[in-house]
Image (cartoon, rainbow, N blue to C red; front, side):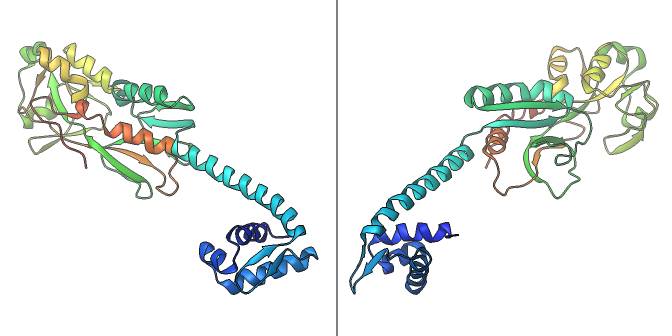
Length: 299
């Protein structure tokens, strides 16, 4: 079988009308070009080129062969261009995982704009309040809030998600406003039965009066006067502004966990991942603290 690479090399020589120029264009030696063309002619059993000291000239048989080889070269160029264009424009299914509250409150506008701008793209949004395994579960991107525990993934920081201790005026009127050391004995709304909370440098192992694995429901329970909740600013912002919830232990956030978009690799990163993560990085408003704060410039 004739190596396709030698057929493409023949096309390059005919177009350059010179072994030397073809070798320079391809980054190989003139001797290599000469030897491969000679081997090609020997395997075909025909003479393709007439050599002179100044140039090479295609023979009649070589001209016919060149037309066929040039058509193959054009098809290869077209295939390469098509793949490169696909890499530049998001296409196909993008599978994204996110914590439930973040996906509901934050990802909807990103997804809608992404789909509107890229009609050949589709998105599957998986909302899960657990650490998903990207590769095992076939996901392209995941939103992680808090410490990263998998160094094999590429992580792009999107910002921080301020977290606050809040309670309703009705609860505080009935049970009083606790200090940090009294948090352990207060009526708390926990995400797990084994939560440890930290307020003003004091860590407390809480015994929740209500345990619920959904932060939005925890915020709703706090609004209803059930107890004290520890929730992100994105969930309690409006209620704090309207006075339906009060921030405990000072005006500042209790914590500022980092928010990252993580994905498996930077190598040959698909356009659908790159463009979507870029879109995520442009929206910072939901991550501002409750009181004051300015937009941070992104590098």
